[in-house]
Image (tube, rainbow over all chains, first blue to last red; front, top):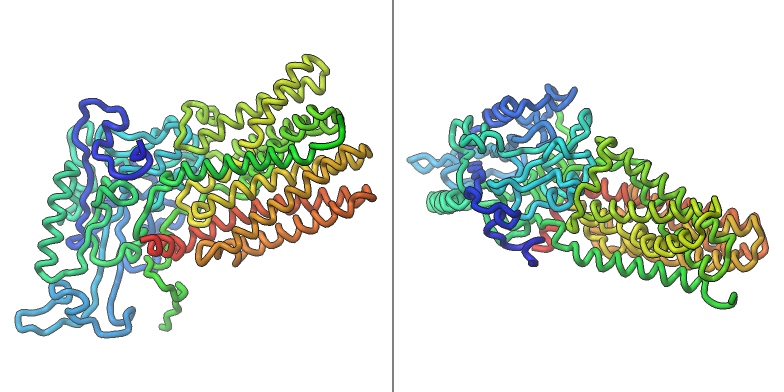
Length: 301
Length: 302
């Protein structure tokens, strides 16, 4: 019972009440082969008919080639651009720091001038223990038969609880519309037996779609391969079913600490502490009653 | 071209200093007003039930009317916070234990019904036994209405709220006692009911002590998790809240002989309670806006 709120949960759709459901699907985003083309952002926008983010949509952010900024109600894929090099680090970066594959070690053994450009396409994590879904008071957020998490826009009343509950800052309210929106993993395409638009559009297979179990195997092999090639910074993010969110349905291969990409380093679903929170609220309520009783006690028949 | 560092020196990496979390869509004055009115209504219902049980009809009447008025005003602010206010009723579409807002909606619905029935009976003089029974039941929903928002805020990814899940319900319980005590002080001072006045005074004092202690606890949380309650706009607001509450408490002590002092005490206590709610919202905003709070709390736990 305790794993309803946190911990490992192997059959997330079954736990949500689906019998005979398809396998859980997900994304494996391998950022080591992302070229920052933003085809995923465009394909997502087009397929899901997302409006422009607002009057700032065409501004230059000054943050490398990123003018999307963050995931939000109208941006369900976001390509982050991180420029790392001597200017930032204040020292010459060598193959020791970057790993030979990325630093550009040539056959003759010389090290290229070291800067590197990290690119990563972020997306809703479709958590095993999804805080947005847990806290939604209307039942607008639901688990699908594919194990993904979607908002039913005909039910959402825009209370914005999910916005504050998401540990990744993914879901947001569209202010001109009043409802919460986020990636559906192209639920309509999944129902039609197609892969999500972003994965379909990705030219380098940085975004891979498939059954989650298969993706985890693929990802583990890819990390091992990169480590063997000397890219020791490569690590998986969100792939562990025993982590604070019970593992993500959309996980990543990163080349630096998660916070460098704007990701929380070790997110834990907030609902994990819910029983303790209610105990303290119950205690406080009892204290309130005791306070009133004490104030009114004595004298007076 | 000279480049200015936009992001202050931080111990942790970040993505251009951008927030990891979304800053809450809950805003001023709606959320603080709802928090205040909810605890006022909750504690006023308990006060009314206790006053009715100890045969203090004037105080019971005031408590019942305040409880009903505050419940409706609070529900109004809550509804105005929604992106789709016309879908407010969807809150009662499911009953979901994992959602404090779902639980809170049911508590608010039950409480509002009970205090409405009691207030209607009080005003019309009809069905007084039913009214008293509903009032007694509201004495049970009231404390939950006052303290559940502690869970509502804590059950988020917002560091300043989540880490404060012990202090927040105590702050709200203290605020509830203070708010109801202030109401009782103002009403009984004007009506010069000696015994009612003493009860309201004790209530206000107990509340001021609890509310100040909880606020003190928030400020003195160790390290980064307490920083938004100490520093910046949210920190100033919480300190202002405590000065108001403590001076309200002092005025309550002095109010024994003065009607003016009683009304001043009620005003100070109410102001302190309101400021505390604004401070809590602003602390949450500050801790969601700066990624260091998220990274620090998760790195330390790991």
